[in-house]
Image (cartoon, rainbow, N blue to C red):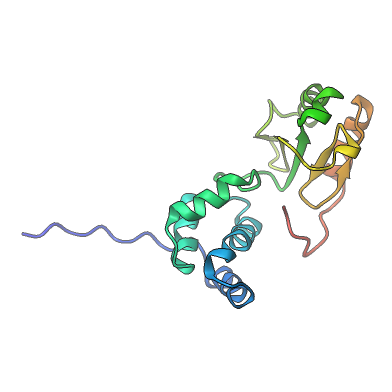
Length: 178
């Protein structure tokens, strides 16, 4: 008697997400180049990119899931588990570190009421993470909100103001998350 096949899992990406990804294909020289925009689209909708989504992106772009994972893991913007409604990165590059970035990361976590970097607040609103480099060294020590707001140069008082600002200000409608 042949072994019964297990059913395929239900698709994670709905047709709207798939169409948004397909719309990028004509804009690029090949489908592989659509990987990064596809990751952004999925992240914007799900606030994460689970493994199943990577598989579905790969299928849409005629790639291997490992190709999608390679792109995803190169950038620090695509978590596999859900994150807060808003996301804040505190830079710890050499410029920021020399000006107290590591300490300010701890201050930001305390101000936001999270246990540490990579943790989401209890209300699900805010995730604070570190970034190896945000490329805004002229603002060191600096932070970046996922709606594009840049904060810096920071000190303890400005970190408290930043957390309040991030929590209180709504992300503009249609604003892409990083």
